[in-house]
Amino acid sequence: MHYNTTCMQFMCLSILLPKCIKEYTMSSFTSPLIVSPLPDGKRWKLVRPFIYHVGSEYSKDEIKVPTGFITDFASSPPHIWIVIPPWGKYGKAAVIHDYLYQTASRTRKEADDIFKEGMQVLGVDKVRVFLMYWAVRLFGMWAYGGKAGK
Image: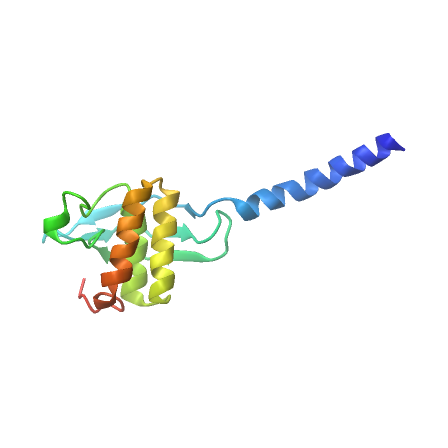
C-alpha cells in the first residue's frame, strides 16, 4: 500500500510540477534586439520585431515591437547621463517602455510597471531600477501617448 501511494504521489508531482514552474518563471525577452542608428545620432530604428513576455516566460501577454519602430532608449536628459546614460543593461526594457508610451497601448502605470519588471529580468541593479522607475512615474506624463515627439 505504501509503495503505491508513493508512486501515485510521484506521478502527480511529475505532471503538476512542470506547470507550476512555468507559471512562476520570470518574464522574458524572447528575441534579440537589433537596431540601426538614425542620422541624428540620438535615435535608433528596429531592424527586426522585438518581443517581450509580460509576467512570466511563457505568458500569452506579449508586447511585440514592430520593425521600423524608433527609440531613443532611456530618455534621460544629458546632465544626468553620468548616472543614467541613454543605453545600458536596461536598454531592452527601455525600448519596450518607449513603445508602450508612444502607442499608449497600456496605461501609463502598466507601462512603467512593465519597464520595472523588464529591468529586473535583465539583472539591472536594484538602486538603478528604483531610480529609473520613479523617474518615469514622476516625470513620464509629458512623454506618454507620443507627446514627446520621439
